[in-house]
Image (tube, rainbow, N blue to C red; front, side, top):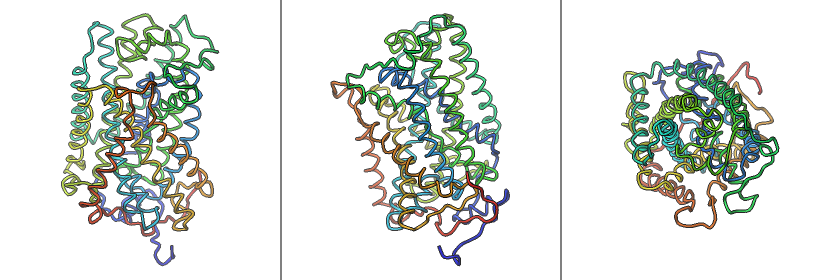
Length: 511
């Protein structure tokens, strides 16, 4: 851009509101978060070791231990390319809209608004669906622990009602206890790491019938009916789900002090912490796993609870460890409610949703109450699908993952197109990748595109109407809905951030 159009922003800790103003927004939310609180907030959502526990059955059936372990290592390495790319964009454009805002700024002008609008819809669907999935995971650990102690049969309505309760609690705490979110994030970060160490040491110390190293690192298992390469690709979906949601700090930038530096750091740090805890936890689980079929068919409904019980042989001890994980998942519901509501708020602020003027209002508590309420209602609607079918809810899990990954893919694609079209070749934030930016953008894009394809594949054969993967159809519905709203209101009203010249001066550094 011509230097006459560039608006210089002093790169210091007091420039957050000025940066936001240059993007065309007024500061309405309260900046409560520091770096530690935001790392805790982000990791409470990423929390890979518990997320992997919640979808362990995918890895068990599709490749077994070696695919879970080596697949996790590979997925995390390429995820870092995505995380660093997003951190750079977040540093240059720290706005609560996150991905869709970056697309609006970076994509070729001809397609920028429409691409941004579609990205916003995928982002919202991904975040809100992930909230519903997490509520389901938390519910499974709660009911699974109760079943272990009392031996009752877990019904679908038990699961849905418990998920409703978790959603309501998350919404209420976001509305009435928003001022405590930073302190809660720090506390759950400590609890998360403490729980990880306690659970890890306990199952390794108490299990006296561990699997062999050859079984853990090379014992391929395949219950899908497909060939080995296909099953391996399916098994990577467990890792894809486990390493997700690290964009959370981007949606909280308007509540972070010195956001241009601290939010990118929180994005990257949450991936590193998630990688190490997830890798160690997966190895421990695979050494301690018993019979695979018994683990998958456990009456608790949670394979990890079965693995813990197989190790300890003690109901009280298993219940304690499972409860520690349940607390993490429950607090994660609170964090996902915050992230989802901020994304709804930001998208409405840009007139991206119906009734945007209502959803973008901020209360005297400095929280978007209406956006929180809508997020809770939609999460509960997704949870309600489980009343009718388990297959339908499994599709929600896939939609959540694919929604996130498509919303990650689009800003990277925009960045690549911007690079080769010459619209913007360098992002001028204090957290810069320099000449390595485009390389990491391309690596991240290829990985995200691969996961988006795999998440649409049927998971077992022969394929029937009961086990068919309907993710592609659901994604098509999201695209259709966004198209309808784009034609009705979006193309006339949707704004997006001001893409004119946010550049930093002074002491930037390259990662």
